Amino acid sequence: MQTLDLAVLRTLIAVVESGSFAAAARRIGRSESAVSLQLKRLEEQIGEAVFVRNGKQMTLTGAGARLVGYARRLLDLNDEALAVSEKSIDGTVTLGVPHDVAETWLPAVICGFRRSHPSATLKVIEGRSAILQSRLADGQIDLAVVLTATRPANALWSANLPMVWIGRSDFHLKKNEPLQLAAFDPPCFFRAAAIASLEGADIGWSIGHASNTLPDLWSAVSLGLGVAVRTPAAVPPGLTVLDGRRGLPDLPPLHVSLCGPPVEFKKPAVDCLRVILEECLAVSIHAAA
Image (cartoon, rainbow, N blue to C red; front, top):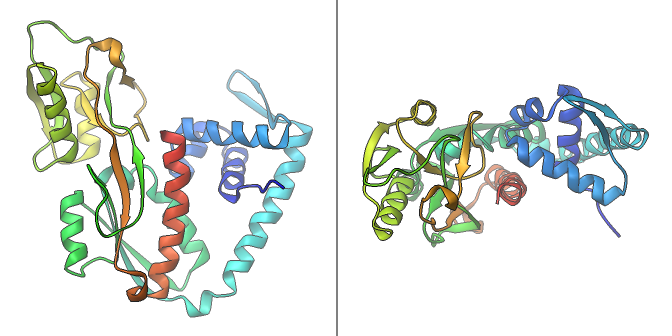
């Protein structure tokens, strides 16, 4: 017997209420392609089209309208069931996340945690993975999502995600000219991976733009100051993933890991956040991979 995924049903409701895949993606903190993929799989699961598409206009089919009604009821029941334990789940949880996660998957996590456990407080700290691991070891944060070359020893959950070159659609690697990179200052996992891949392919490089924030990095790439290496989770509008036909070398995968203390040391609120994080990361990474 098949079971409907509540996360997918939340995506369906977000599309219906916001009116488009793009608006729904911003609302739930996922990429537009991830939203499209979720709804495609939902249609395959129920064996019916959910929307009729006419250009940018989307209209619910009869089956889609009936499904939305069931989706709202299922989600309401889910929230009511979670509310049974609300009084016992309180306290403050501090979560550390890299910039990429903060701008893509984090909003859905925050929304889910606050809706399920309104008595608890969630504090979020952004930073680079190495710094987050250090703060986790010092007890300054409770959980951390990190991006690393190998699975960390303190990982509670981990998955592979590809790294990709991202640039303007008109980019082409020029012969006898160094490739201009847009990257964070070291230490930066993505910067190190880009340089290692270029040097392994005997391709010259230079830093065309150094940044400390992700919005600034994307702005530099949009202006043609360099190409960047990140994950394919959320490629900004106007930029594209640069495949092998552009002359760029392959990149290794990375590990996306949720790290924290052993189970026996966790507070109830920390464990609740861990469950929500694992669900959101699993769905988002599967859609982005």
